[in-house]
Image 1 (cartoon, helix red, strand yellow):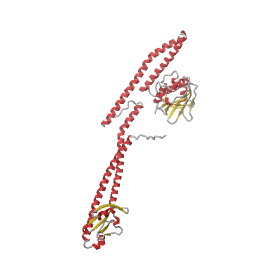
Image 2 (cartoon, helix red, strand yellow):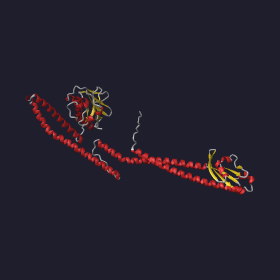
Image 3 (tube, one colour):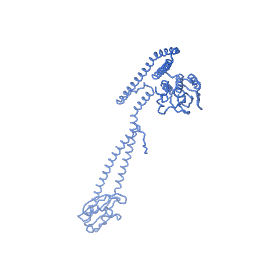
Image 4 (cartoon, helix red, strand yellow):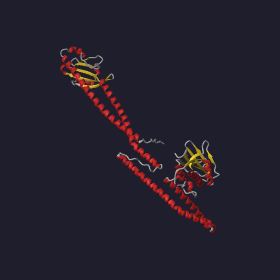
Length: 461
C-alpha cells in the first residue's frame, strides 16, 4: 500500500516571496538570453566581416604577385601576415600543388567541403574545430591566376568574450532573483500585516473580548476590510448579548413561579400521610422534578451571568486540602480520600466561591453518573495547580470528552441515569476558564473517569 506524503501549505508571505523570485528569475533569464543572443550574433557577424575582409586583402596581394613570381609560391604565402594563431595555404591550380605558410597546418586542416567548394571556383566560409580550438576558414578562388587561397582565423578571443558576457548575465540574473526575493519578502510582510491584525482581533474576540475592533485604515481596500470586520464583530456582539440577556431574563422570570410551585409542593409533602400510596408516588416524582427544575434555573442564571461577564474573580491564596475536605463533607463525600501527589503543593490562588462550585459539581457528577467519587487528587507543577476527581464509573468515550463539557450535553453513561441538569460540567469549564485555566476528562488509573481542572499558579494568567 503506497503512502501519500502531504506537505504543509506554504505561508502567504513565503508564496509572495517565491512568486517575486520566480518572476524576477524568469524575467532576468529571458532578458539575459536575449542579450546573450544579441551580443553573440553581433560579435560573430563582426568577426565574419573582419575575416572575410582580411582574407580577400591577403588574396589580393597574392593575386598581384603570382603572375611574375609563380615559382616563388612558398615565399609568397610565407610573407602573408596572418592573425596570431591563424594559418594560410596557397594552391596553384595548374601545378596542383599546396603551399602552407606553417608546415604544421596544411590543406588537410581545412574542412573538405570548404576545400572542394573553393577548388570548384566558389569562395566559401566555414567554421571548424582543430586541436580543441575553433576557427573560421575562408577559401578565395582566384581564377585569373589559376590559384586558390585558404586562411584560418582563430575564434578564441570572441569565445572568451561571449563566455564572459554569458557568465555576467547569469550572475546578474541570480542577483536580480535574490533582490526580487528580498523585495517580495518585504512586500509579503507588508501585505500580511493587516491580516495579522485581523487574526489577532479575531483571536481576542474568540477568547471573549467582544469589544475588540480594528483601527481605521487609510488604504481604500484595507478600509473596506476593517469596516466589514468591525461590522461583523458588532453584529456578533449584539447577538450574543441579546441571547445572554434573553437567557438571563427567562431564567429570572422562571424563579417566581418555580418558587411558588416549590412552596406548594412542600405543603403537599408535609401532608403526605393524608394521601394514598399511589398519590404519594406521584408526589415524589413531582417533588424531585421541581427541585431539579429549580436547580436548572439556578444554573442557567449563573451561566448567563458568566456569559455577560458581570461576575468577577476574587482570587486568594488557600490550602486546597482543608478546602476540598469541607466541600466533600457537605456533599456526602467526606469518606473520599484526598491525595496530594509527591513533589506538589496544595497551596493555590483561586476564587473560593468558584472553586467550591467546581469541586461540588465534579463530586455531584461522579455521584450521579460515575458510581461515586473514589479519590480526589491535588497536584501542581511550575505553572499550574490541578484538582482531579476520579470515579468508579465506566469512563468517558474519547469521542465524547470535549462535547461533555457543553451545555445540556450528556455522555452515554449520563443518558442512562436520571438526575442532573446537564449544566454541571459546563459550569465547571466556565469557572475554570474564568480563572485562566481549563477542564478536561481522561481515564482514571483505577478504570473510571478522571475529571481534571487546572488553575494558573499565582492566579489568573
